[in-house]
Length: 442
Image (cartoon, rainbow, N blue to C red; front, top):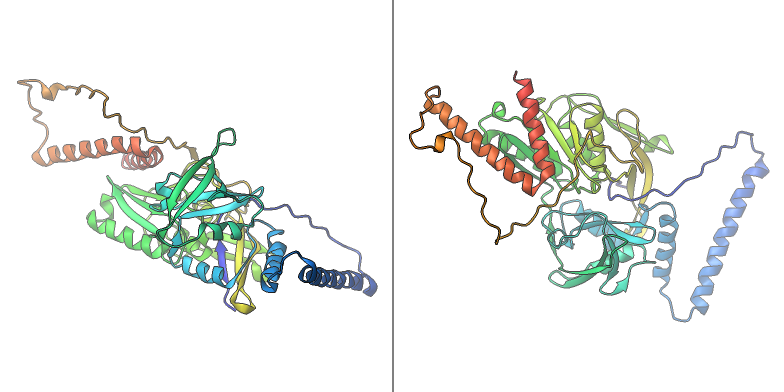
């Protein structure tokens, strides 16, 4: 059976207690737990029959069994669950980069549905939903007490239909409602653009298109710049990226590393334990690299950030990541369904686990929301310089080409100043790249 290795949506791992029995058990001691297990299974069968016979309403046998299976899985940790055939089919479609919905990754915390991150250019993103928001009701129906799959099913619906979410952003403030229109979510897993002399790679999720999108974008931007020698460095933006396929996290880490371990996974058995190493070849040929993360960067994003940080290949900027250090395996089951089961923890190259801790940035830069421009505000007076004075003496030390270079640098600085007002974290990362380049050229 095909298994999908996932480093997916964030959450909080439930505590686990392990004990070791050193004494050699007798046959009777081995048989006792097995007998007790069969007794408990008989109890399950008795309860199942009692529900079928005596519950106030007639129940659907299949639904009851699925609920029991899911209850068994969700009792393990927030990321293990049962996928009914429809949910399993949708999950397979999601990893290919297109699905219907609102465009949010969610988890569960203390019984509440919590947003890990909104996806770029989706209804959730445009409505202003944020990482850390709690969804307490869907169309007026409370989500507390529902499983995560049940809550997600409530949010699904026909494309073009409206849905109202009740949001709690700060537990000390009143809830508020947000109405969104469901849409087909077509994720461009990676968008690449150039800001000044820096290539910015925005990776929103880790699906089958993430590495190809990023690699193609890098090649395109380098060609447009006239060669890598005209590029100062690169910014990898993983903010609000909730994770996805482990294989894509490994590929994207490998894109910037020449050698060394990327990540290791350690499970209960050797089959669930692996080490993944980089192969020779850096798409950026060692140019300066900054990685942006925040509290919405989870799992696969943390694998990439942790690997590049441990190898000192990148400077990590932003705020602490989500802290999900476990790997889920999707196991197809009979009846066309599947289970999502936590099978391993992952560790960065230095051997650290990120579970419940997250990746700490090398430089903490809090996000400052842009302040809307006030149309009634008076324009600031232009600052005058020597060049603005009538009859000022011209600079005779610059050639025409050098003058053009000065003008181009001034335009780049003005664009950078504008970016600071729109996205201060990204602006900081680009400034850092510029500083590293200036120091390296001396």
